[in-house]
Length: 457
Image (cartoon, rainbow, N blue to C red):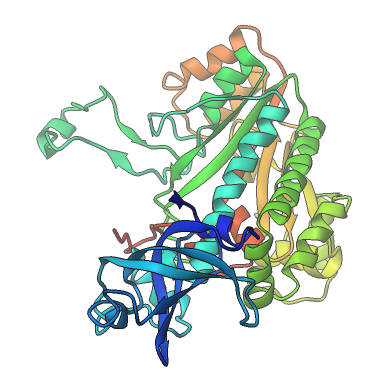
């Protein structure tokens, strides 16, 4: 007998055929001489209804004791369902209980649970409709990223998770040490890697190495930030997509970022229709229209200076005051995208003083060739820049930032030997999933969120 997943069964119309299906029970109800079991195997949002007749050998001993959370294997015949809202049901020839779930303690009962409650049982929350849908959408977006860059001729590079380079220069790194290290050996400068190391906050600098050998590459992996930000938009561990392109200026960089974002949104709408309809109906009303608007719109472009002028003339009182030279906050970004332009917005030419050392200084000497892509509901979703390829200017910027040039001598070599204009950007993957699903809290779009004071499983 063929074992199939529920998503495949629901697409079939070969009534009378026999199949074997596994799954977890969502509900059981008894009517007369039958039990109706709703099971789900995670392959799709929809459940499959199982009809279990009292004539089955284990009906009284097992089937009538089945409760939510139990895992079962069912063999039976596919039939057209007379019930409203479903086309197919499975008439069981056998129902075997693989794993029991205590109905007194199983926390996922037939009711809506808050996302805050589900976060406390992160090992069980993927069994819910919403979190299961998030997982499938996240998986599809991951697949689409690789598809896009393969199509565009990029090479994937696995950049190191343990690094000795602080790309952002903010010092918000988790330090790495072995259990053999003591306070005394650390004091003496004895480190497992021969020097102080930390968990990476970005793979960009290492991606630049390969971009200047292979032309265009992308890194996609976990990054870590020891920032004490306990908000709905921040995580201590998150995934970052970082493409880098040689012989590519800021305009080339912005074009690729826009094309990629539109490609990913189109792909997930096409391939995750059922899950996206759930988010549109129950998580964020109008979500699909919002995403379609991003896909079909021409992204607006303004400079940072123009953005500041718009904010200052708005008459709006913001929590974070507006002046030239400040970093734009989420409330500023959302105001511009949701109330002023009502479209995705690309902001360029940020003040050099608030941006990292590696961004290319513009001819005015005060700004850098940087860009952020802002979208409604989230704010910044992509941040990037043209990198500083001029050796003398890069050295000057690093010295101003107090960076040890000797530690970054390998990075300066890229400017000594065949330097070329190059650029890249970073996309916080969880921000993308949050935008696509409409989830209000970023903790709901990563399987096991890590935030200050919180690390389940």
